[in-house]
Length: 389
Image (cartoon, rainbow, N blue to C red; front, side, top):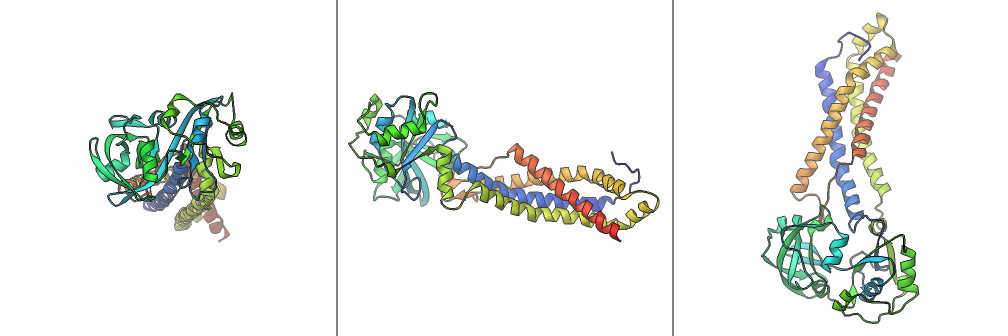
C-alpha cells in the first residue's frame, strides 16, 4: 500500500511508461530466447545424461565429418559396466532441394539412449533396409507421411537412395529435423564401408566403470574383446586405433566443446543477451525518468506540504510496481509468442535444424526482476535530479 493518499499520477502517462517497458521486455525476449534456445538445443543434441559418453574422431572439423572404426563399438559392448552402445553415422543429404541430416542407427540401441516417440506409422526395425523414420518438423516441411517414398541424395558421396517412410517420430529436440535410417543405409549414403562410423555413444554404469576406464580399455589396451551377438550384424575389421585420433566426452560436453571451437559458449551468449537487455533496459529507465519529470510540479507541491523525498520515492514505487510487473510479464509473453510465430514460419532455423524455444522459470524471474529493478532505478534517478532543482 502506498504511504500517500493523494492521487497525483496521470493514468495516461503511467500507461505510456508501461507500454515502453512492455516493448523493451518484448525486444529482449524476442532476441534472447532464440539465442539461448540455439545453445541449449545444440549442447543437448546428443542427450544430457551424466552416464553417456560420445566418441568421435578428434581431428574432424565437425562432429559429423569424422570417422571411427566400428570395431570400437564392438569391443565397447563387451566391457564391464557398459550398458548400451549406439553406433551412428550422420550424413548431410539433399531432399527436394533442402539440406537434411540423415542418421544411420541400430534402432533398439539408439532408442534406448534417445527419448523419441513414433507418433504416426511404425518403428524402425533392424531389417528395414529401405525404410526411414522422419522427424515431425521435417515431415511437416516436406509434406511426408507414412507410406510415402522419397529420394535422398548424399552430399558427401555420389550416391542416392529411395526410401519409404515407415513412421513419423517426435522428441522435442533437434532430432525432429532429421531422418533416421538403418545403419547400413547411413553408411551407404556416407560413402563408407561397414567398418566405419561417424560416432558412437556409450551408456555405462558409473558405479562399475568410468569414462577414463573406458578410454584405457578402448585405446590404450587394444585387444579383440568380447562381442555381443547383435554385433554379428556388422562386419568389423582389425583397424588400429591411435590414442590421439579419438575424442571422448560426456554427450553434453561433446557439443559444447565443438561450439567452443568456433567461439560460441554460454558466456558469450549470456554476454550477448545482457547487451540486448541493457539496450532494452535503458528504455525502461528512460520511461520511468520521463514519468517522474512529467510530474515534477506535483512533486514540488507535495514536498511543500511536508512530504519527504523518501516518502515520495516509496509511494511512487508502490504505485508503479504493479504496472511494471504487468508490462514486463506481458512483454515476455508477447516476445515468446512472436518467436513461436517465427519458428512456425520456418525463420528460426540453423541450416537444417529448427531452434527450439523453452521458457526457463529462472529466466522469467530474472527478466522480470531485472526489468523492474531497472525501472525502479529510473524512478530514483529522476527523483535525485528533481531534488537538485
